[in-house]
Amino acid sequence: MANNKIFLSGIKPTGTVHLGNYIGMLSQMRDISREHKTIMFIADLHALNIIRDAAAVREHTYEIAAIIMSIGFNMDNVLMFRQSDVPAVCELSTMLTNVTPKGLMDRAHSYKAATDRNTAAGNDADFGVNMGLYTYPILMAADILLYGADIVPVGADQKQHVEFARDIAGHFNTIYGNLFKLPEAQIMPDAGIIPGLDGRKMSKSYDNVIPLMASSAELKKRIMRIITDSKTPDEPKNPDESTIFMLYRHFATPEESADFAEKFRAGGMGYGDAKKILFEKLDSVLAPMRERYEYLMAHRTELDAALANGADVARKIANKTMPNVRHVMLGTKK
Image (tube, rainbow, N blue to C red; front, side):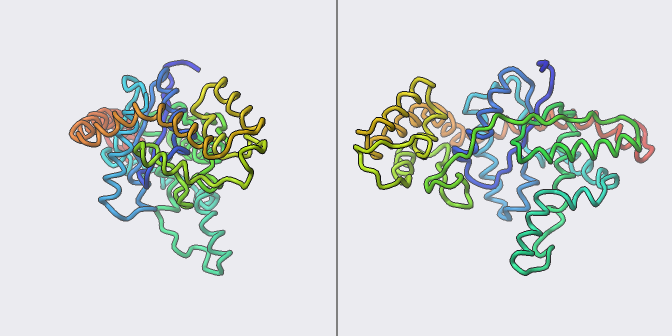
């Protein structure tokens, strides 16, 4: 894939970033940024479907910006900004609604999941569904098309978002000419299900997460809460069934992982010792990131400046796109 391709990803500021977010998306986007131009926008407008506390949205936005700047992204290749700082994305979203078939929105996974839950609970299918949720894919398409993104890295379960952006761009181009490029999905390497403290998928909704930027003391406390089975230290254990090992392998070298797995299989290592090994490995990897993160959170003027500079660049890109959109749709001058 050529290095001049533009990669794009958005992160919703809806809660604490945890290890599952880091393993499943952030670390992979970081690696992409080392070779490619990468747009990382903080999707605060998308967050409004989930969180209704402005102070919390602002705080989580700062946290995400600080994390992006702390975990090894090549910031020379990264365009980072707050979604709402580029009003053109709302304008483009409104304009795209006029070429988007309603049936496309009816098939959106997020909308279908909401209606399925309602039906199962005996409620009206659209109970609690607002238009922000229903038209979510159109705003997402605007996010992608406005900046001319070539590649949108996603998990396999999120591929539909990019397919919808392609469909919407296709409808637009059929009517008005080939103004938008069709983005491509790049399926991120499967990191598998990242287990939480209780063995279920790590998720804020299960309250089983390990925050990415937890203090050393909090990190140790969380790791010691990982639920294990009743095997004694002497008994052999299957590493592939252990939350401890499944987390460890994402931060260790292949040689370290192989050695740790062998200790599980051989017996003679209790879960308490295994948790200590996991803590030492995670803390050694995360400590430098945490130090930088804590500095930035204590010096928010640096975050404000980074977000403002990114938004300025993003608006300049948008200001090249939107006159063409207005011209073909409204007949205004370019």
